[in-house]
Image 1 (cartoon, rainbow over the protein chains, first blue to last red):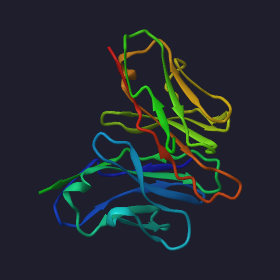
Image 2 (image 1 turned 60 degrees about the vertical axis):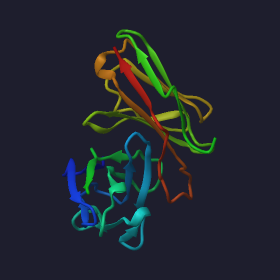
Image 3 (image 1 turned 45 degrees about the vertical axis):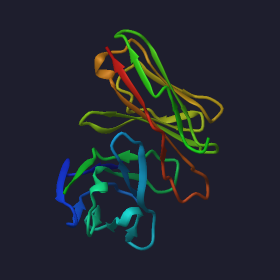
Length: 114
Length: 117
């Protein structure tokens, strides 16, 4: 079975500073990886996903993530954050090949400080 | 509608009562998921449907929880004899999974906020 670990429950960062949210997964087979964002009092929406191909994935709102198979990581990065990026971010994994459940991490709350 | 729809959006119930939460997935999506989001607990997987069958129900916390899906579409999550610890936001998601699908991206509803008093 697959699992996801988000090491940081909260990450405070100053506006316009870079940020990295960490995600590590565990699986013995090929996976698909996702980052979802949940803004305050809203539902979850997809930020970006890795299915195959290039290991650097670009998503919405200037975020990107890099799939590192050897380190089983899929860290999320943004070079310069805005106040509007304040939200909770969830990393998720599913086994490739379809018909598989999606497993989420416990989430990282990003707090952008003005 | 175009998205995943959940009802009710809010539900307050007395301890010991039964509740039913409904999820209307995106039309054509064969996979449906229920998650629970509690304060400080992240997203807790409850059950996964593929069509009308549930190949993975390992996340249901007790036998008070059950779920069904009919016609490969609407799903109902039932909680019997509710307890205060059942208070949470219950999220439903659906995804398009097919023989040639390369994406299992899940689309989420807005959730049902359940409060047991």
